[in-house]
Image (cartoon, rainbow, N blue to C red):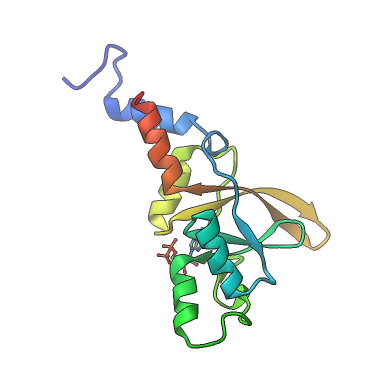
Length: 156
Ligand code: ADP
């Protein structure tokens, strides 16, 4: 009972499917601001782009940090001038950013979202640089990507 004709349990079939689909197949465009941006500009970008997490990059698009809705709310509530306050003061910064890679299975990336209790992961590729490895931002992986995949897999 509970087995398909293939002899595989449904959970194994789902794990197999999600383990074979890569982040590259479901990712969204990265929505990013420069590390020199203000908290005000970051909040405006959040509204205009309709995202809850902003990726913060240095010149060349290399990952510096992540600013969430609550990070920006906290910064705005502190009573400082958010037109002057750099986003870099209020973001979570490297090397504490949890990332995913285009070739990573969706299942593994989804597990990262859950285990680290975050809404989004920057999708990066590693680039060798004089000062060590840098992470080039190539996309964004969110709970919405998983929800969309979930509905697509159901054929709806
Ligand atoms: P919110 O803070 O709006 O609830 P999240 O749950 O995504 O949104 O973020 C919680 C905290 O984790 C924030 O301080 C945020 O900067 C940080 N954060 C968000 N995404 C990541 C990530 N991919 N890696 C590390 N920290 C993150």
